[in-house]
Image 1 (spheres, rainbow, N blue to C red):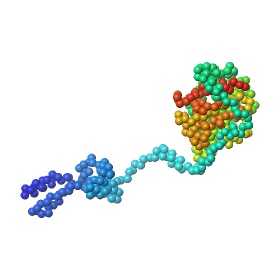
Image 2 (image 1 turned 90 degrees about the vertical axis):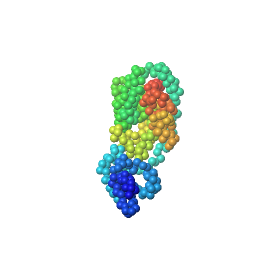
Image 3 (image 1 turned 180 degrees about the vertical axis):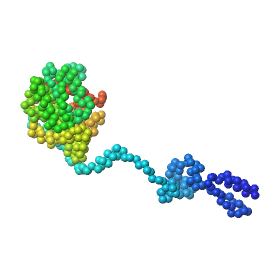
Image 4 (image 1 turned 90 degrees about the horizontal axis):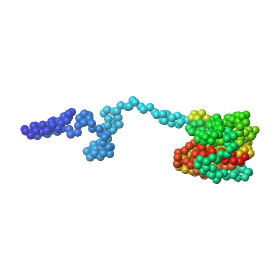
Length: 403
C-alpha cells in the first residue's frame, strides 16, 4: 500500500499541466503511466521562450531521427497538414523606385540586337586621304615652353594683348562644374581679353556656328582680331565657322583646337550607329541635358566625312592642334580608353583618337599621357600631369609664334 502511494505521489510531481495519467489496469499490481512528451500547445504554454526554428534544420532532423519522430515539424508542414494554418500577410511591401524604373524599362519596345562592325578601320581616314605634307610636330617646342610656364616665366609674345580670346566649350561643357575655368582665369591673369562663347554644348553644329559667327562679327565691328580656342566639340565648331563663312577669316588671328574630333569621334560613332546605344542617347539627351541627340551623330565618321568634303578647312589660318592619348587606370576615362584599345587597337584619350584630332594644315602637339578631361578640368594632384591653365597658355603662345 505504501508503495502505491509513493508511486502516485511521484506521478503527480512529474505531471505537467494539461496532462492526465493513465488509469491503473489492476488493483493488485498498480501501474502508473503518464505522458512524457506533452502536446505542442501545452509545451508552448509551459515554455514560451522555446522556438523550434531556433535549432538548425539539419540538427532538428538528426535529433528527430534518433527519437523516431517525423522529419517535418507541425510548424513546418503545409497549411493543409497543420492544425492552425498561418493567415496570409495583409501588408504587402510596395515596390521600390528602382523596381518601378526597371519594370518601365522592360516595358519599352526592344532594340535590335546588333552591334555591327563599329568604327573599325575608320580612325585616321582624313590623314590617309590627305594629299599634303605631314604636319609640323611642335611637341618638343611645347615641352620647352611648358617648363618655362611652370617656372613662372613669360612665354606669350607682346602681340598677345592686342587680341580677343574666344573660348568654346565642348560636349556636356554646360553640365560639368569648373569646365574651362582654369583656362579662362590663366589668360585673364596674363592681362588678356577673354570671352566665352554662349554655345549650347548639347546643341547642333549649325546652331553653334551661328553663335560663333555673331561673335566674329562683333569683333569685326569693333576692329578687333580674335584667337579662337575650342576644346573637343568646340574645336570642331571653330573650324566649321571659318569653313562656312570664309568672309570672316580676316578677323581671326589664330585657331587653337584642343583634342577636337575633327575627323570624327570613335565613341560618338558607336553611340550613334549601334541601335541599343542610340536608343540610350535618344532617351538620355533630351531628358537629362535638354539637348539634341543628333549632336552626337554629327561627330560620327560618316557625318564628318560628308561635312569636310563639302566645306574643307582653309589652310591659310595659323592653327595649332593638340592630339592626345592615354591608357592608365588612374584616368577617369580609363573604361573608354580600354574599350577603344581592346576593340579597335586605337590610341585615344577616352573620347577622341589621337589621329582624328589633327586638323589638316595645322601644326600638331602630340601627347601620349593626357586624357580627354585634363585639358579642360583640373584633376587630382598626382593623377594628372598637366594643368589646364599651363596647357592653354603654351598652346596660345605656339599659335602666335608664326603668321
